[in-house]
Length: 279
Ligand SMILES: Cc1cc2nc3c(=O)[nH]c(=O)nc-3n(C[C@H](O)[C@H](O)[C@H](O)COP(=O)(O)O)c2cc1C
Image 1 (cartoon, rainbow, N blue to C red):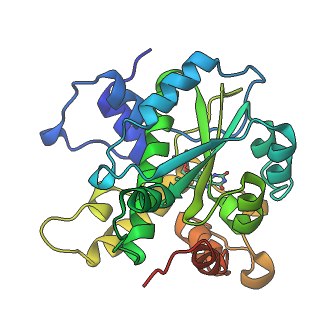
Image 2 (cartoon, rainbow, N blue to C red):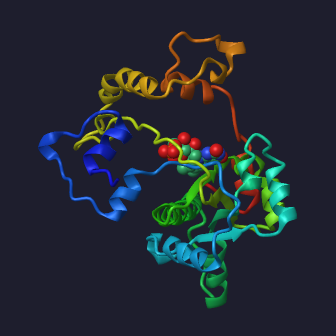
């Protein structure tokens, strides 16, 4: 049965929509976006080629900074290459198992080659060149995700490939000025995942000025709402050897523990080796 926007909203945030501003004019795009969930388990059924082409066309219909079109997708079809990447990340077996796996790359190489072809200097060799390409790649990926979910497919973005950026780039032969933003597993889900509850809009959307108090007002309630819907089991508490087993282990404790350990701190060096100045 189709859910209303109000029902999907409650599912997403764990509290009801503000009745005064209620808008229940659902359409397929809105329903798809509000229903988003990441999927990590897939049926073996392949994604038909014709559908892949449609999804990629949707992906590349995303807006692009200055129309520079700085996203490149590498579909990983070769089984050795796929397993080469999967073996780097044994804790995420869906990378090797999903029917489709692709890598979304920021690509500042194309425009630099175009400059060389046209005999023009590339005069923007600074942090923004990297940033713009990363954003283009990210929104191309998101468009693909939305299109795929609207056709009953499931996706899992994989930023952990950046923990192995050098090796992944070797496997995919990514040249200078090209870098992986995220992988993406794609396929028909074998089971429907749950909807992950988000922070309330009052904690993330401000009016006119940044509101540093908003987090304080919303966080504890969010932790408890989320815990009530799907509590993180004790065995999934992170770094108990350092922090012990918490009696109440909410989202904020989980995320604070997650980022308390360094991860991917060599990524900047990798990006510089790919030719970016990042100044
Ligand atoms: C840029 C990006 C990178 C991600 N990387 C990974 C990853 O490496 N492995 C994974 O299992 N999930 C990954 N995810 C999925 C997130 O864990 C997921 O989006 C988050 O838990 C919220 O859940 P939801 O997408 O179901 O709402 C990534 C998501 C994004 C947007």
